[in-house]
Length: 344
Image 1 (tube, rainbow, N blue to C red):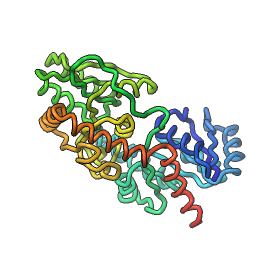
Image 2 (cartoon, helix red, strand yellow; image 1 turned 135 degrees about the vertical axis):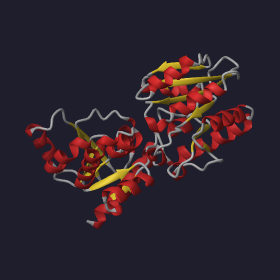
Image 3 (tube, rainbow, N blue to C red; image 1 turned 90 degrees about the horizontal axis):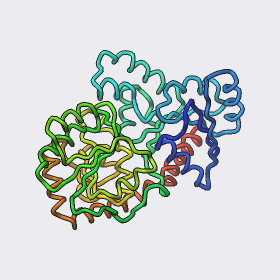
Image 4 (tube, helix red, strand yellow; image 1 turned 30 degrees about the vertical axis):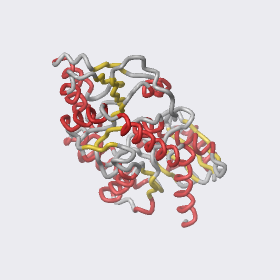
């Protein structure tokens, strides 16, 4: 099967790279990337020529604005990988309710314009079907996964005796950084260090809380390059996922969980229906309600139980390495495309 990726994109976002790398390694696929700098006549001609030789054209994550243009000029069926709903993100997660009409219409038109969609969770598939009327058979579920050469188990190189709890993220509301900050406050007198990587929308309020309470147990690293993340995760004793309370947080399994698990780390994250599509709470992940007190208690319990941490970490690595490598993710995509191709 020949698949062409096309969009006004750098094709460097993790989700997109997993799909492309997995397809390139898969013996049953040929993957070609066509980046465009402008949606103009010249690039339309290139897309038409390249797509005539392809079985499918995929518009990568976040490129909602490219779908109509690609659909107009593609000679092959168009598959869109939205990764997010702009309505769910801006209206539900960020609570920008005044944007509800425009964001809903934008998603409604874009998601229905593509021939097919791929969704990162079954919960998001249900959302696209229920709210935007996209037929379930037009949507394939393809989880995020990870790239095996980048994330794999290594020894913890830390040299101190403190217990290191870590989080990385872009501080979007669904990540619930406020829950982490308040848990750090509750554990301020314990021998625990919170390693925080990243910045973003809620970072200012997070930082304000840390400074207000003079929390010396929180270390702020800011942004790290993607290639620095594996070593940063290796230094952690325990990893934190997401703790947001919105409907979006119910429907996602974020990249970081795949990365933590691939590094063979014990993970605490909020319980959700989407989480259980990949992990089994109590076996390969610790799932809790998004509450600072519960998080603080769980961190303390795991700090004092190295055997449990190691068992959960080992089970998480087994789950992820056996089912969610880039090649496995490519297989899930190819299975979906093969089925829809047979039905056309």
